[in-house]
Every structure is written in structure tokens, then in C-alpha cells.
Amino acid sequence: MNAVVESLERSAAWIRQAEPRVNEPFLGIVLGSGLGDLVDVIEDPRILPYEGIPGFPTTGVVGHDGGLVVGTLDGVPVIACRGRVHLYEGHPVASVVHAVRTLCHLGAKALLITNAAGGVNASFGVGDLMLITDHVNLTGKNPLTGTNDDALGPRFPDMSRAYDPALCDVLRAEASDTGVTLREGVYFGLSGPSYETPAEIRMVRTLGADAVGMSTVLEVIAARHMGVRCVGMSCISNEAADGVQELDHADVKVVADAAGPRLSALVRGLIRRRDSWWEAP
Image (cartoon, rainbow, N blue to C red; front, side, top):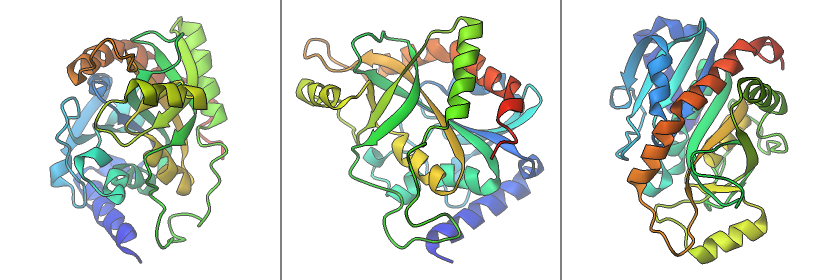
């Protein structure tokens, strides 16, 4: 057993002992910058701060209150990561994906991974929600680098369906039925922490980016390696660099906060429509 698996075992054992409900199948949720208020609609919540969980790194980024929130949403068990850690904080890749790997190890039926992102597609507006249909990893890192442990997943996992088509269809249907505008596009993940230059935005737009951010791609790679289905959404929190208006993280949080009710509605729809995917392979 390698160090990654040993760390997962320690984290999972502690979490199961601290909260018996974790032994049931659940939906895992990762909440990005400013999106942590989704936990306010989780019923009978129990918060397990990251700093108390063996093996969990802690985050120091504003808008990322670190903790696992265990509870139910419309009768379905959920575990939400309220905040995440990033490469730009100086964490190694294994630490960046540790929380997601732990959710997978605990038995998540699927993962909904969210983020706040800069809008690259000129047709997107600030505050829009974007369904992630694919991603490009420009972080220069991969959580699968090094010796592979077959207990986690295969050496060369397929990423052609990184964002599960059936789960994407559920969110599309829910958005249509509830009148929530849901954009779609490709998310480009960079390492940060500096926002992109106008030249960098022109580059990624040319390459096919619709949104750009500093998270998500490594988490999805790690989860898919472990065979867990993923669906992702970005809140377009700002228009990516145009060389005119300066970007500020505080503005990102304000926009993401305002998107909270629409995000919550789509998550509840994903749960309400679970008959179409909960038991699917």
C-alpha cells in the first residue's frame, strides 16, 4: 500500500468514526470560491473542519471555509467540501486532490464539482452558470504522476467522458424546466494565483476555452481515475482579462454569492431526478 492510499485510509476511518451517516451511499459536492452557501440548504448538517481530519490540508483562501459538511438534501445523503486547496497555495498535487479522493474512497455515487471562473466566451455574462462539458489541463501537473496503485485505478485511465453525459443531461433538463440559464463550455485549468494576461486569454480563446480558472481539472482526473462519475459547473464570476478593468478576488466572491440560489436549484434537481443515474454504472 503506497502513501496516498494509506493517507486515504486514515482520513476515511476518522470520518466514518466521527459521523456514522458516511457509511451510506451519497452525492459528493465540491464548492468553489463564494459558493459555500449551498451548504445552508443541507438538512441536519454536521461540519467536520478540515484541520481535524487526519491527512487533510487546510485552505487559507478567502471564500474557502474549509470543512466537510455531512447531511441530507431532499432526503438524499450528501457530503460537501466547503472550500478546497489549490496548487498556488504551495500544496503538492496529492494534497490538492486529497479531499476528492477521500469522497471517492468513502463511496460517493457521483461528484458535483463547482468553481468560480473567468468568462472567455464573449457571449457569457457575469453571473452565468456554465455546465462544464470538457476541460484542458494547463496546470503542468497531474495527480496520477508517479507509481500507479491499482487499488485506486488503472495506470492509463480514459478521460474521453470526464464529465458524465447522463449527469450533464440531468442538469440541462432541470435548467430548462426551472428557467435557469445554463451555458455550456470547455474549462481551461491554470495554476494561478495571478489572473491571466490579455495575451494569455487570447491564447486560450483561440485554443477553444469558454472559461478559465485555477481548480477542478486535477480533482476530476483523480476522481475519474477511481471510477467515480463527475459533473461540473462554473459560475462566471468575471469577464477574463481585457486589459481595461482590473480583476479582484472580492468581486469574484460577490458574484458567486449571488449565483447561490440558482446553483442550489440545479443541485436539488440533480437529486430529484436521481432515478435516471443513481443506480447506473
